[in-house]
Structure formats: C-alpha cells, structure tokens
Length: 155
Image (cartoon, rainbow, N blue to C red; front, side, top):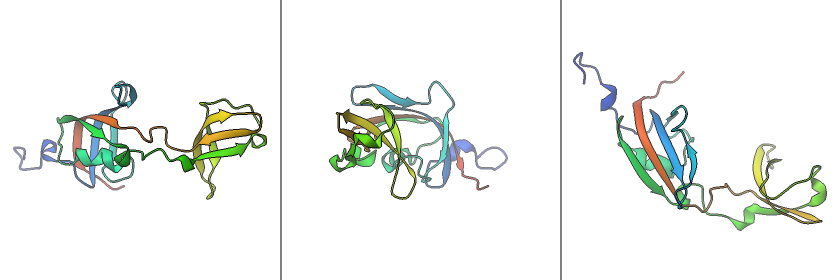
C-alpha cells in the first residue's frame, strides 16, 4: 500500500488475469538466443490469454515487478515433441515456384486457415514439408525481467 492507502503496483503478484510487462529472452540448450525483447520494446500480455505456452506462464506465477529469473522449459511444456506425423510428402507439381530446404511457406489447413511449414527436402518428384513448430523437441531457457504487474483492464 502507498501513503494514500491504495494498492501499490509493486504489491501485485503475477496470477491469472493479471497484465504483465516484461523483457524476455528464449535460448536453446547451447545458449543460442532464438527470441528476445532485450533490444526492443518489452512484451505486455495477460496471463492465460494464450500468448505464451503454459510452461512459460507457470514459472511466472507469484513474481512481482522487479523480479527476474531463468527457467528451463521442457518440450512437453513448450512447443511439444517433434512429431514425425507432422512431416508430409507432397507432389512437386503442387508447387508453382522453386523451393529449397529451409524455406518457410504458408499452407492452407483443413479449416481454411494458414499453417506454416518448413521445406525439409526436395527431389524431382516430391517435397517434404515439416509442419512441426520450429522449436518442437527443444528444451528452452526462458529468462525474464518483470517490469510491471497490474490487474488486466477489459476494453
């Protein structure tokens, strides 16, 4: 509480329905940084809104503004294990342009939405496309610095 008897922002702890502003860095097992807000604007989101996988949200609960930490997130709690069934062989004729391994392309899913896929391999007749999340099967380190925690406001 501040001197006016009101809840001070530093008193709020992260829980469901709280709006959080933080800086984060996501690293692979070898320390390679795959995403970070350190050199740009911090991220703001509501806990439980689906912006972060549950394994990234769970260690944040109970933290307050000014707290920092590094958490290991296993594949099961991050982007899942690599699933061989998510790798599809498509006819080379289905592609209008030349494709190369490593290229990320957008495909239509059964519901008409967009689904990203990575070209895994190409031969004369087939293109193999991996629809797994690029970080599937990886144990990640999630480093955070909590800048602000407050009750979420609905607009």
